[in-house]
Length: 442
Image (cartoon, rainbow, N blue to C red; front, side, top):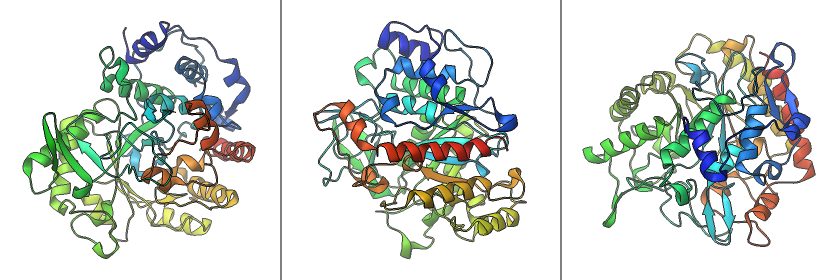
């Protein structure tokens, strides 16, 4: 095969010839005005995308192309959307919990990369002036219970990961890893996302007691930032996954690097020193050869120079999102800061539910329209739930801390049916689509 998408389809189905998807034609939204070629699916439930085959997802992705040509096979050379080296300063980051939507059958949790691919048609593509970027919640194995779901009250945290032992059983299809490597599976996801007009990234952990160094034939080792070998391993793990096509890294607990504001630090263990983090971001950029990398720091303060000089491009949760004029004010205040800006968020990984639909919709509007000129927009951050509402008895933070199956009959299909809300969620998703339709022409 000439590319990883065709290779993956051929291995999974024996067929990589694509067909126009009429269901996608019937459910697509278009951006308004001059952005009318930008298309995505809305007024849908996630189960309508997650239940069909991987082949159907690729058919849908190609059917929604901005181009006027339908590709009968997935093209060999797909470039990332080009918004310049500083694209991350303006982007909207949408975190997808690829573990929560993985294939859960009985106690097994597998193949989250396929589920992430299947959601791509329903993620609005980038606008004319700024990028939309998907952040995957999990790449590496979580420390306890990787590859398994547990009861809703049992901890199985995504905030503790192992390095040096490959990728999560929750995410990668290891049944075909001898035919298509984990790195090639990630590359297939990234090529499909780029074809959709999206940037991609992933979440990483920097609290050292939430990291383990794994070895094939001996016990895991506690990660230490004071150990140069561990620092090298960390950098090389980041670079290896970036080389599959990711361009953004969301850095958990970035606010507290170098001992800053530790009275509000909720992670476990020491963080990198300030100059050490400068070295890490510089080395990741240098070793990957990507000048386009965007580093996003969790939380932010008024010490913007600190984060810019650390190598970050965007921060979260500095600007109050519920006041449109406040968002617009800070967009104007920071318009000359083209390397780094703090941002606004609809919700984050610590959100514990209960936010009314109306509040979320207003927040999305404020994130997407809170400026005088589109090129001065602040970066924003939102979660999967802000596009596809979760069932009422769970929330974003719960699904980061635990990994329950909501299946009523042990099948993955039942889990997908019950993870999200029903017709009210469909109507909410329609309203989100209408907001993005106006924004993508900007």
